[in-house]
Image (cartoon, rainbow, N blue to C red):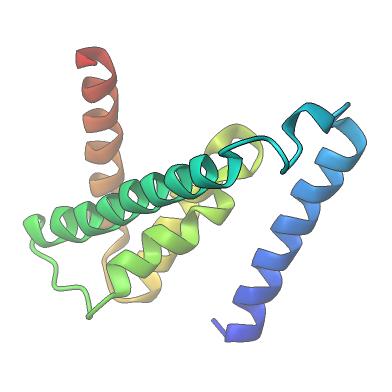
Length: 131
């Protein structure tokens, strides 16, 4: 996948989010950047999201390795991170399909990627029940 296509897809996703916010956001004046401490809270939230997403990316690699695969350096992490963009597709399944496709493109058998996704979904459900 070319860098231009990757950045183009990201730019398109950001544009769609901006348009949705513009047309359906309502009165956003109460969230004005002048609000005391808002930038610190946004920075902390961003850092926390980044840590969680990176943990998920490394967990995806470990899951593939535990199923007998040897993903190339950073390919498994890239699969999860790129597939996050598709997370907002209708039905909230686009990121799963995208990650499976990316895994297959990097040499992971489709059945292993599908099994890893099923296990990951199960882990997520169990973690949700336990919390």
